[in-house]
Amino acid sequence: MSSVLLLLPDFALILLGFGLRRQMHLGDHFWSGLEKLVYFVLFPALLFHAIARTRIDFAAAAPFIASGLAAMLGGILLGMLARPLFGAHLASEGHNRGMVFASRFQCAFRFNSYIGLAVAANLHGEAGIAAMGILIGAMVPVANLASVWMLARHGQLGVLRELARNPLILGTLAGLLFNLSGAALPVVAGQFLARLSEASIALGLLAVGAALQLRGASGAHLPSAFLLGVKLVAVPAIAWGAARALGLQGIYFDVVVMFGALPTASSAYILAMRMGGDGPGVAWLISASTLGAMLTMPLWLVALGAA
Image (cartoon, rainbow, N blue to C red; front, side, top):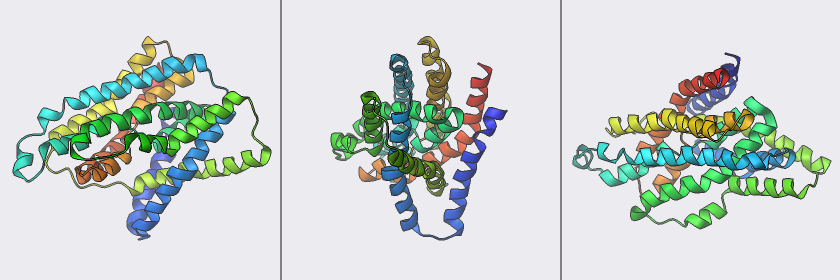
């Protein structure tokens, strides 16, 4: 039960963000600016600071990343099974059935880095953040390539350019290079990054809550439920099985299972909109997975505690 209580402050921040957006009337520009600040400045600083300062067991990192990759590929393959569930009624309602599937398909495996880093920090402090950061840096390219591949017939996107400019990947790589160099952060630089890191998780979770949308299912309830089950149940189960098979223990085992249990990221909505997809449907799925994760992630934590 104590491990489950660790998630309550994070979920409370998400719900607070949801309420603030609807009660304080700060405007879409404010929340859009806040998400950009977190994404481009605060979270890269958090990742760099944690990874640069943490002793990393690189021998265990390979099976750790392999376990995360197994979970990701499992979500991708299971997500593809949802295609037949998007019935002909969508076309009769004026929807492009293939595009609706291609847009929502990514909700089976994309992950919310903000929540992941917050949970990792609660479980294992800076070591947890560093481990989650390494996994995020390795899995973001896989998630983006799979998502764009499915949407590729309906839009254009410079995938490699997007990956090269991804601030979470850049923050992770910079932290790893600094860690490998054996150098120590100057005191002032360390304090500066620590201040940014302290602000990142709370503001990131508020931004997650502010982005919640409870409309937009567009009638495709069965496939949406299937994709939610894949993301919140099947993917963490695959992560668990792969981690056990590869002999992971401790921090790496906990982090990879919770990585698998994360809800879908808002980047799925952004990509769907940029490529002419089903934005409202994806936004609803992201919100449903976030709210659903408030029930399923505590259960996975209980399972970790009993393992």
